[in-house]
Length: 131
Image (cartoon, rainbow, N blue to C red; front, side, top):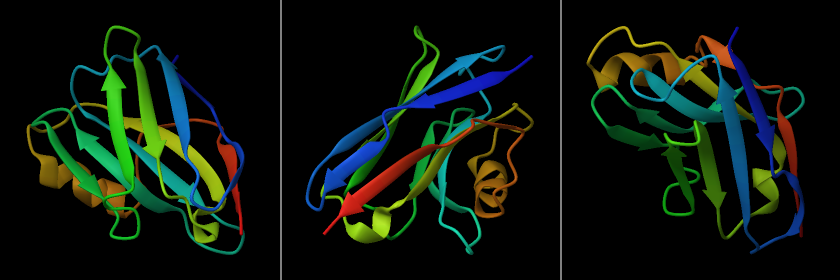
């Protein structure tokens, strides 16, 4: 059974930083893809950052480019989202997700990321940025 467990969310002032963690079991970060998404009430879940492990490519949403960094530690089977220069509009529930290896192609996982169509999901962690 695959489990993804997020931690690190909380309340932070605008301009501050947070680092989210996602510990995985039942799956390794050797290939496939890992990603972070976020969702606010009444809106669709959106992709924030993606690593295609199959071809080592990284993608970010335009709204977080240059402020957020996705990374992984394969030895700990953990992925991270480092968030800097946080803005009130970053307030959301953040989810980590993983997708099994299917193709050695970043574009395949990018398409799935854009559709928020990943195989495995964490339970979500709240991030609130106050103005």
